[in-house]
Structures are given as structure tokens and as C-alpha cells.
Image 1 (cartoon, rainbow, N blue to C red):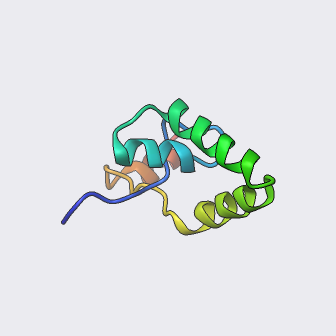
Image 2: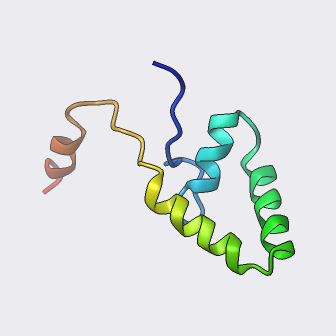
Image 3: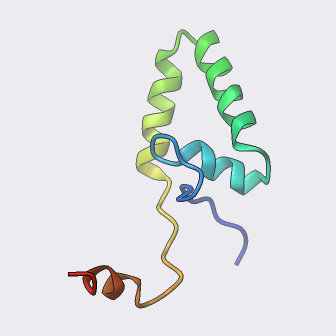
Length: 77
């Protein structure tokens, strides 16, 4: 199976969409964010915001690597 696009869990500011795109293309997340802001500014901001919201809903979270992660969360209590 090929490379998949996921939201970033390490490089996130709002929901991890731009960080996930940066990880997918193996570029700096700051560069992706700057390109997004420039795109949004030249498109009167509204389409850029709509695209971001759609991407935040469509791009999945990265699956957990460890099967026991969910059990470890409850072991603290």
C-alpha cells in the first residue's frame, strides 16, 4: 500500500491539516501554511476557510501504532 495522507498529530496548530499535508509531501509545515495563507488572501479568505474546514473533516487522524494505547490512557485512573 502506498503513502497515505493523515492529519499530523505532532505538527498541528488547529487540527493538523497543514502539518499532515507537509508530512505527506515531505516539506516544511511553515511553507505549507504560508502558501495556504497567500492562497486564502488572494481568494478573499472565504474559499480558503471553506477548503480548510472540508479538509479537516475529510482527512483522517493517523491510526495509533500501539494496540494497547487506549488501555494505557485508562491505566492512569
